Image (tube, rainbow, N blue to C red):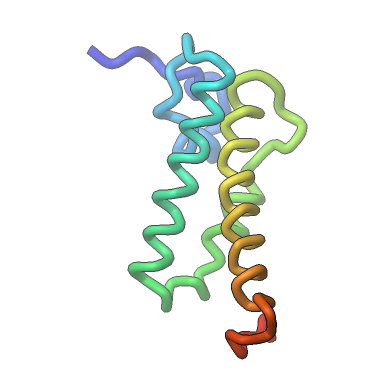
Length: 105
């Protein structure tokens, strides 16, 4: 039997994202689960590049409460930290010694 999630206390629009975080999870576990969800999101985007126009990340950000503390705050911190790392790595690749010829424009 699966442990109940802390997300049952959240507004309906947020339950979808945080429902897998057990109510008894530690902050570190919630953070790791947020990063894992970000990994799934990035894999989805890689497999469905034309869906980038759907603004899924923007819609997620609309639902996130960036002032939340506890498990919800840690979950979103983990999610967006991995997204930020991916963006920074992409920028580094584009700017690496000017050899890639890449551009963010």
